[in-house]
Length: 375
Image 1 (cartoon, rainbow, N blue to C red):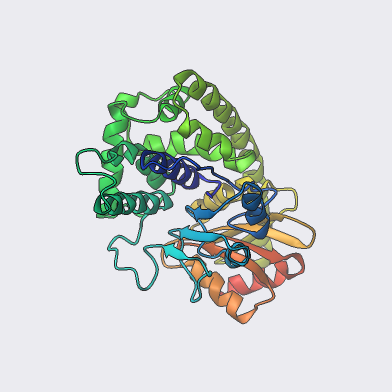
Image 2: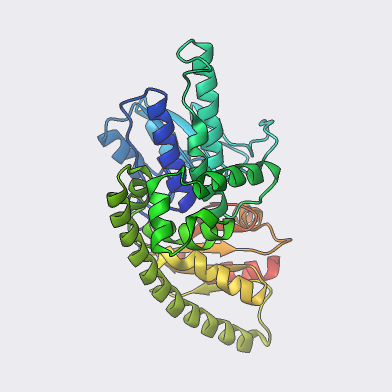
C-alpha cells in the first residue's frame, strides 16, 4: 500500500517488481485517492484492502502514524508490515513489524532514506534471507541493481537530504537511466519532457520527471503513475506518459492561480500586522488540495518563512500542507502544538522541512495565532 507522491509510486513499483522476482505471485497494490481516502493507511483504505482479500499488508512510504488503520487490520487477523521513513511519534502503531531508519532502536546509519530507499533495503534483506534458506544462491538470485533507477527517481523527487548513502543510490540509478537500463516509463517521461536521457541529471529527475509523476497523485489517482512504472511495453508507457504530461500542464495552471491568490493574502497580512508574520498561515476554501504543498513551497521560497496552506476538506475540517526553512523543524513544531492543544489538530505527519495536517475548521484563527507566536 503506497502513497500518492513520486516516492510512494516508486516505492510501490519497486516492491511489486522485487517481490515478483523473489517468486511471489499473489501480489496486488493499493494507493489511496488523495480526495477520497486521504493520506496513509486509514480505516477506509484498510477496508478496501480487505475487499481485495489481503492476508499480509505492507505499507511503503507511509504507515508509521496510521494507528487506526493498522489496529483495524489487526483486529481482523491480518498481518501488517509498515515500511516508512517519516518521523515516528513516541508511540507506534500495533503492526507486526515496522521498518523505519528513524526508529530510536534502528541502527541503520543513513537516517535520510526516502521511502523507496527503505523498500529497496528491505527487499535486499529478504533476498539475503532467501539465500540463507537455500531458495537462491549468489549465482541465481534476483539482480536488484535493476531497481536502482526507481530508487534514484524516488529519492531525488522526494527532496530528501543527499547524504553519502543517498548520493550513491542516486548516482548509480542515474547511470543506469543514462544507459537506458531503466523502466520504459522513465524513458517515456523523459521523451514527453524533451530531455536527452543519455545526459540525464539529478535536476532532470527532480524538475522534469518527478513533477509529471506527482501530477497523477495531485490531480487524479497515483495508480496511473504506478502503472507507468510497472509497464513493460514502450508504446503503453508512452500513452501513459502523455496522460501524465497533460495532468502536469493542468497542475501548472492551477498552481499559477493559487500562487497569485496566496500572494494577495500575504499582502493583506502585511497590512494587518504592519509586517509579514514570521510564520505564514494561509487558507482559501476552494484551493486544490493536491497543489497546496507546491504553493506553500513557492511562498516559503519567496518570503523565507515557514508556510502552512489550507483548503476545505470535509465539512468542518481543513486540510493543510506545510513547508519550512532551516532552523524550524515543522513536524516537531506541530507535535508540540498538538500536545498542548489536542483538540485542534486532527492528524499530522512529516519531516523537518515538510508536513501535512488536518485541523478543525473553527480552530483556524487560533492555529494561525499560535504558529505566529511559536516561531
